[in-house]
Length: 343
Image 1 (cartoon, rainbow, N blue to C red):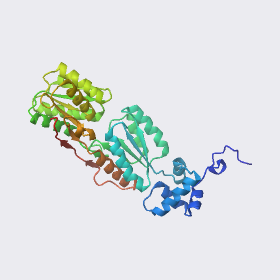
Image 2 (image 1 turned 180 degrees about the horizontal axis):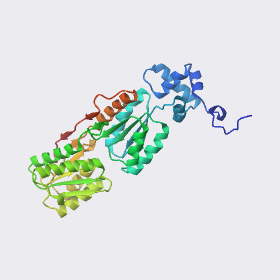
Image 3 (image 1 turned 180 degrees about the vertical axis):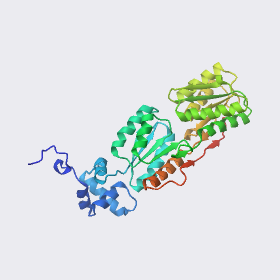
Image 4 (image 1 turned 45 degrees about the vertical axis):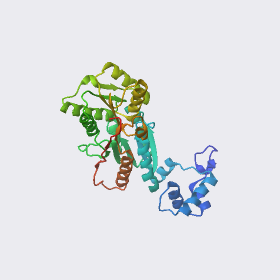
């Protein structure tokens, strides 16, 4: 019986196959597959021939079919809460640079700081039988936790540390970063210190907790000077919250912002309103985004190793996917206080 014309088989639909690409390039199907996956052991000349053959035939890799044929995919899922934040763009770029030359595809999911959205992304990506999971932080739904545990897929957590959880993680102590911010501003002789945080993801709350601890130890904590909002972090919001705080709490002489974009907004409003920085109020940011060193005045900020975190997390993942244990499962990449003109 003749197969119907709408059969999904590539041979009946006319879609080019990997075997056809290999024949046109004059290589074996295995070599063609490795070349298209970017595995660095394939000679550059062969890679070029295979890619040109795929281009000539309009061949498109089918990751689902590849996973079905090998009972193992070559995909690593990376879930981040934002793609508009340079913090995660730098991390993703580093992950890609490590995994791509080893033949792995990076599947990126953006869950917009929503735990339910992250759970849905996990459920959808599990259908691709990923080889590994790179996840941001530890704050997620219980269903997502159970899904990860049941999958037995190697997992590395980024941006936060938890030595007691028995997991593989690469990041730094958000609490310690907050404590460092407090110590720096106190050392500058500031007495009325405020914290402004937005988005209120777990990391923003943890660095706020560290800042609070530092103030409490110095006897300088005032709960009225802690401004937290679930609104998305932005330059505009930073300026708005800065002006409101300065009007309602005029004694404030230092502010630690949970993100640099908030601090950028504050500096712009201070400049517009004639509020002297750091003379009237010191301003300290977090993450040390590229623009921070060029603000007026130049923004002091806590620099986070986002690229190094992505690279080390991807390296851990390669070890796990090879069936080995990571020698140092909890890797603290640290942070650096960049002191500039604003403090």
